[in-house]
Amino acid sequence: MNVIWIAVIILGAVGLVSSVVLYAASKKFAVVEDERIGKVAEVLPQANCGGCGYPGCSGFAAACVKAADGGSLEGKLCPVGGQPVMEKVAGILGLSAGASVPKVAVVRCNGTCENRPRVVEYVGVRSCRVQLLAGTGETACAFGCLGGGDCVAACQFGALSINPNTGLPEVDEDLCTACGACVKTCPRKVIELRPKGPKNRRMVVKCVNRDKGAVANKVCKASCIGCGKCVKVCAFDAITVNNNLAYIDPEKCKLCRKCEEACPKGAIHAINFPQRKPKAEAAPKQEAAAGATVAQEKKEA
Image (cartoon, rainbow, N blue to C red; front, side, top):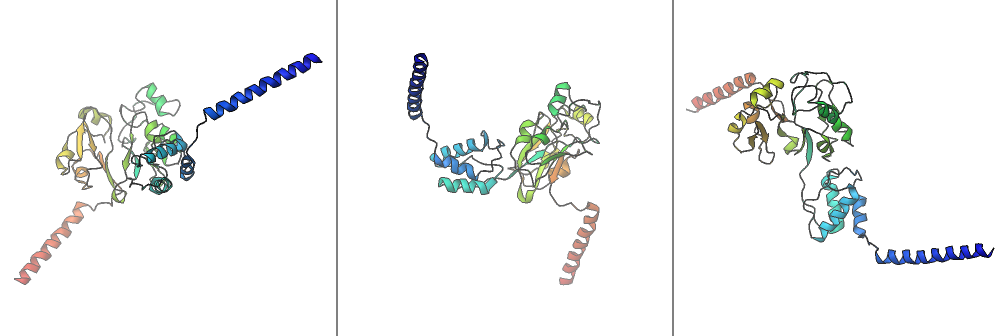
């Protein structure tokens, strides 16, 4: 019995000493979290998508508080919550929220089944990354969309889907939050985040093929061939051609659509613009207007 009591006393003493040591350590090494972090986290959407560039909403909240100590939230943006959420965050931190540019995911490939014929049949896991490991995919284009749907799986908001007729992903702009998950997961970097633009209108080169013109044209009828005609007609220096591929700078583009008309391959797309009237219909109206002006001038004379 004495042995048992001795064991109990020893264990009790060890437990007591351990608790005292742990208590002292907790006080000495305690990390006090700024209460503002919790308040900021409460107004965030808790999507934890990583689109802000930080590990989840709590990481973004901590980054905002740290930035606020420097007096500015410049460079901080929650793509899911957008401007309304950032205004709430700024209000909690006693700062003003700078205007953010709304963005949307854009699929820069028009290699549909019609434009880009399949040369092999892939049988296996429907994943872009798996197909890429197996070769160039089902087409001869080594740059375009693989159609495996990795971007669809990565999107938490249901904004992406594969069109069964074209084999390409399509973006629902009403659901897209510009979190960037699809951009990160695409192994060929076909998807890009671009400013939505005035009235949601934007000009995009829907091609990422960097092969020389003859090679690109052979594998896809809608590929950019780097001819530079779009560069020549752009009066705003918004278009550049690098590595045989044209690119439109959304910051410089004035949406004049001259590049769209000049492109011989139809690689430049005007998104969300009203449909243009055929030139054959526009010409008679212009002639009639010109005739009316001449008639008016004669009458006044």
